[in-house]
Every structure is written in structure tokens, then in C-alpha cells.
Length: 332
Image (cartoon, rainbow, N blue to C red):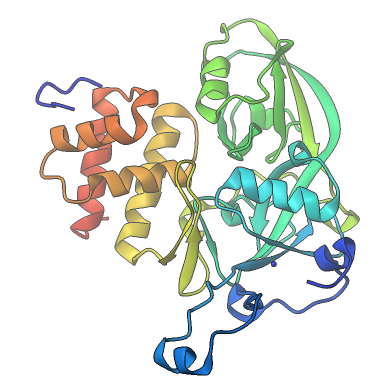
């Protein structure tokens, strides 16, 4: 990315402990404290020493979006680990989970689990349903698709642009997992890789998409969504959030300020414009990289250190730097 000036949760059976038919959400999303095993210290020592604090255990409630008992998940630090915990709770394979939404069982891309989970949020996991194969004649350069992924090897359609080529094909829907393109599997690929594969398809040729739609309950069957109005979406719920990171441990943080939220959304818009993807975690990481930087070259070095695998073009880096600056200065 050359910019010239840069240097560089006891006692219950396993199933009943994981699944509860009707349990109210724990206030604040927190679990009980663990019992401390072992005999206590002598009274004198106990009086002299402060009681050690037991770490608070974060506990979240979840359901399968098409209908299920309520499950409890805890002890995860990344999206991949979260999916494994949800899969364990509901006795399914982690790869069956396509994506998760927060506080709604509907396929609502505005409520998509992304970079953060509010400590009071309820998680709904959408699992794989019907497979379908579609032939598409690429009559235009742009297909009108925005791709994202779940951070666990499943890329799916987040938005379909109104009036676009794909908009005319009613069988292709928001939430569909793209399994293969022209017979080549893209399972395990990141969203930007899938978007590039679609962009590189030759105009004037027919190509084949193999898709998997999310499993739906009866009340979820409704006219196809184009994807929500992202600008109206909220990134978090509650006063604190659990920040999931692709690298490093998850952390409990204050929810982003209005200014930071605007900056993250603006950068996410640029990701869609330049790369055909949406990724709040990536956008938030880029905003973090811009903190304390005095110019675009310092920002570019920070991006290289945090996200070097992307090799963002200079024009994109400058636009992201400008968008972050505009948001921080209240110009957006």
C-alpha cells in the first residue's frame, strides 16, 4: 500500500444446562459467579487479606432463527468461537450456521451480528436451508450485489441493489450463502475474494451460482428483502458491548460514541463502494487505526500493520482517511 512517506458457565445434565425452554434473559447479559473450590484460609489470614474477586462471566441467550428452545452461550472470544458454542448448545455443526442477527429472528441485515454484541442482546442463529442453483447471464459489468461473510468461512449476500441485474432474478435473495461460482467452491473464502470472483466474470457470458438460503419458519416467509437501510441500523445495544476480534481476545467496552459510529458507517460505505463488501469489524478496525494519526501516510502505515493482507489501493486509503476526519470533525 505505497503512499510514499510511510516507513511501516453446574450440577445439571449437559443438555439442560445448555438448553432451557423458557428462560428470561439475564439482566445485563451476565452469568452468576463461579463457586470457589477448596477450603478457605485461616480466619486471621482471611481478615488480613482482601477477598479475591471472581471474574464476571458473560452469558448470552440464543435461539435458532427458524425456531428452537433457548440456549445459553458463554466463554467465547471470537465469532468463530461463538459459532462453535452455539453449535454445541443446539447439537449442530458450526458450519451449518450462516450468520446471526441480534434481537430479531428475521433476516434483517441491519441487525446482523458484526463487530460488537451488546451485553443485553439476544442472539438468533440462521442455519443452512434449501440449496439452489441459478444460471445468470452477465449483461452488465455490475451485478448489484454486496457481499459480506460471517467470519467463519461463509460468504453471503447482504444487499441487492434495486433495479440491478440480480434484482431481476427473484430466486436470489438477501441472506443467501454463495457456495460456488461456476462449479468452483468459495466456501472458506472471505467476502472480498468472493466479490472479486464475481467482478472478474466476463461480461456477455452465462455463469452458474450455487446458493443456500437460510432455513425459515413459516412466519419468516415474506417478499424478498433488498437488505435494510444501513444508515438507520444500530451497531450496539446497551451501555456496554462485547467486542469480538478476529485477532486477540474479546473485550468489554463502552459502546461507540455517536462520532465513532458515524465514522465506522462511513468507512463501511466506502468498503461497499470500492470492494463490494460490508464488514463492520473491518471498518471499526480501520477507524481505530486512524486514532492519533496526523496524516494519511501515518494512517497508511497503521493500516499496513493491522490489515496488511488487504493491500488497499492508495485512493481508497486517502478516501477512508478523509471519511474518518469528516466524521470526527462533525462534517457528516
